[in-house]
Length: 369
Image 1 (tube, one colour):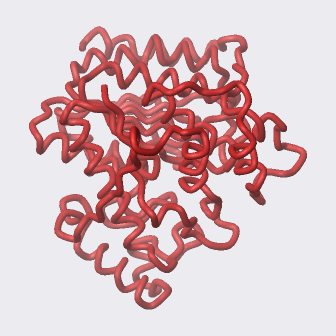
Image 2 (cartoon, rainbow, N blue to C red; image 1 turned 180 degrees about the vertical axis):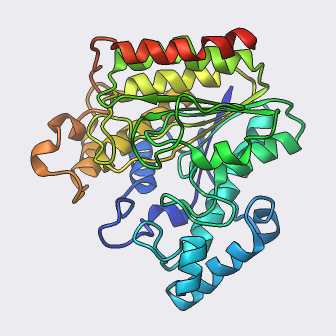
Image 3 (tube, one colour; image 1 turned 135 degrees about the vertical axis):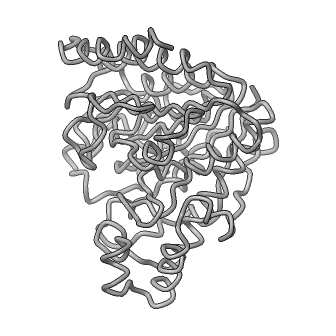
């Protein structure tokens, strides 16, 4: 499939301030690495994301919440009432200049991704993946839920069955809740057990398929779950479109999770999911280590667009990584290879009994189709 890269100028700035986990360079790093490696340009242009308008946002978010967002941004802070009702202006979900445009651009980019995917492509929108957003409140650093809008657009365009797969280290609670009663959508989330938002238990029923994994998840265990549970669950739904939030916080070295994946394992899983249908959307999601995130998301674009990843990065790309900093990652935790390479070494290991229990728990769903 032809691959499209979607971004926007607003994402080349962090937006968030202070010591917030998202106050790190993310999309700007990805775009800079891709440009330095010759992966974007005339043959692979970066498409500018549109900004979703308010009427479209009301398809999922409540008018009261949208009004509160506008009030808070105009005032530079949320009122006590709006903070209590809509979870705005908290340490988790701060108010900052450009908040509305940033969140609405995320939705616009994911809707454009759905349009391009419907035309028979894989659309890559790494600034998307705000999967925690709820209809009437901000949640988990997410203000609007762009994966929900991508799925809605695919359904509007006539796709009959959409599978949503979330590989982020945190449960995709907002997307699951949005489509819990919609038989046209199956949501599959692999995430760290016992980690915020503390939802997505293995026992949860309905149309949701949850795979809560133990801390320390290695590549061997991840591959086993993808091959024996995630892909069968996705295939057996017989989808004609797929939306993936890949995340980067399940990678070894991320400060907000305890998972230990290599980026190569994550890339392979996304590629296998993309190959399931003729229409595919790939979104970014979480990730709080700027080195592992930048390398993973840049490399994902190379894999989706069929471009070679060098064993050792050229000097221009190395200088981009060397210029990064992050208060959440101590100096002694920074792998020197993060500065010179893109592909991680695999992190193979034993497959623990908990992993086989997760596979076994989903066999009846696979058998039922």
